[in-house]
Length: 382
Image (cartoon, rainbow, N blue to C red; front, side):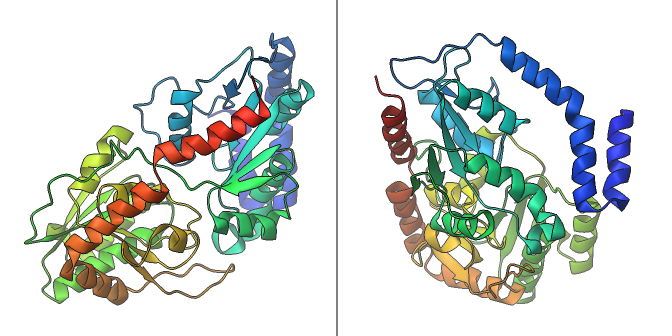
């Protein structure tokens, strides 16, 4: 580890947030200057015959790696609008996955007549990021305010951006995250003798996993046949040990199967083997995991918070009421989620069919691409 990174680690422990930000900027100054010099040397002439899009290097050359979150949607977009380098006239960035030195990139691009399209996900708030929320919201606000057009991932994303970033000046619309409904599609139903639960994605908060384990234990206590597939990276400190300890404490080792980080092309099989997705994350702005699940005919259990009520209809799953707060997180109790499992399994074929219809109607890749195509062609006409 370099001396700069060691200094940052120490700074994060004892320096107040405002001073810590100045330390970060000082440490990054040489790298930022090199980046600015590279931009100055870049031979760039914006194309004049229709859209040519750059994603700020957020899309890798391979689509088969372990790619989740904000980058997944860019893979769909890049299929129709491949990443351009020397002649791009549109810059497209996602708030949850901006490239390093994005502000410098946007300033350089706009000075050359490039239009900037911003995809707004959620924001930082005290219950999630404490008194460091502005460390995320400040740069996000500065980027969003440069946009020529904004796609909000949900109405919830628009509302919380207005609240924490301030009203946006650019025109905007809602564009839910999308799914390839030809790839994420129902398969043969799993064996109905045991309810197959799935919890998947990148797990950054412990409650998101531990509450699901408690739900399994509650169902076992009720003698309800159940098994859980816990898939995805556990990303909080000492997560693996904490999860293993919780499984031992609850005595559910025989009911839980674990898969760590996985490739995107593996995901459909995970959903297709499940009866129900459990996604208890609080105030999730527009999660892709429930959308992928519904496309595979998998109903969803979660909290009635964030963007989830816009995504999951009552026919396609069960959302459980939780308190509304920006100061702390809340999630459904294990008992409430176990009740929801029993409710869905009692009429699972109906929920399954409704989930698939929901995905086809609102979240298809074709619908999402059509919205982007219309905006791109208006900003960079032929």
